[in-house]
Length: 501
Image (cartoon, rainbow, N blue to C red; front, side, top):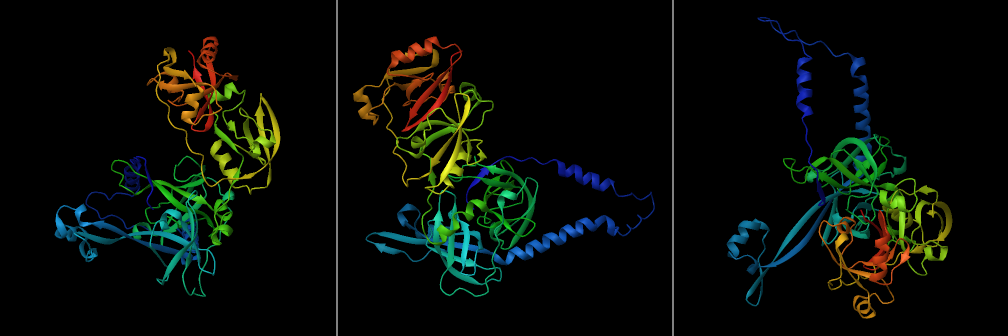
């Protein structure tokens, strides 16, 4: 595992608990020997004994199908990169440093770079589920089974956008492979007991326990599509790709990342916050990945953003939730279905939409060509549209170039703007667009607090189309409290609330 977050964790409760435990024992009278403790009542410890037996049974059920994944990549460098010569290199790399190859007057060395993670056997054919970051950009992969047998492996299919990969044992596959059972991650609830299995710090077949701390974590910043289960079961570097299982021994997630302690917490060590990819997200992709085919995702053809409190007021919403459409691409599925910029998507195929990340996941998981019922709030009323989901293109739209600064000042808001001329539009790749181009934003100004940026094109203000700077000035002069701006940024649109007072 090689992706971490730093969260400082303080723990002073342990000392208090220890003191409480000490005072619970009777003390001996002066000059007398302490009385030996009596046997602990079976009725008192029975629940703990039963729970321990349950954990042991789950571990024995899952561990045989968990593998350690070893990777190796040869890194090339030249002796000139190290100014102190071969002796220094050999002290640095030890016996790993091979004899160099001579290229003219330069020496080139090849040194192996090794990594380790975990995985789980999916079927008798030798397919193994792991994280993409465990096996990406490597030259050689080997897997070690619970019984210490080692096999070479190869990549079958990967999906970097979710950090999921399927690898396979090369050559003859043993006929007695144990396999995991994938469970229903949607059935998991906060507080449920879970177990993590993997190879933290290279310690293979390690078992840890905890609970589900939260579901639907989507702001972690690890993958493009996130819907993580959060757990406090200790996981550490090397656990990546290993299973998170419920008390039925079913895999409900794949451990992928951890939050690490800050000062004094230890670099790269568990701080009680780990993240696992839910199995229901993985199961939908497995048939495609095991064929070695790329994952296809659904698409609406809109640009969306989260609904803030200010935007909720502007669009007459009872709550600050949903996904606000700031742009509808021409001839896209959303355009053909009648969706418009300013619509707030609050429901997708019967599921309530909380924010734009959740909507992206729901749409992406829908097969291209399928029909979906999309509920939106438009002008304060909810309407439903039937959308035929499109196919996500493989390449993103190129970003627009940044404009040159200008001097027209809107000092009250900390803005510098200029009219977008045809010549400037052509230079910036904004042909056919109209509006006021932001050429400067003062630090700490109302414009900066609204997240307006140099290069943004203000196309609308309070639902009025803006053709030039003069029109923008008229709208701002009339505004009393806030102004709702439709801004185009690097080929996409978004709504921004600019505070007037």
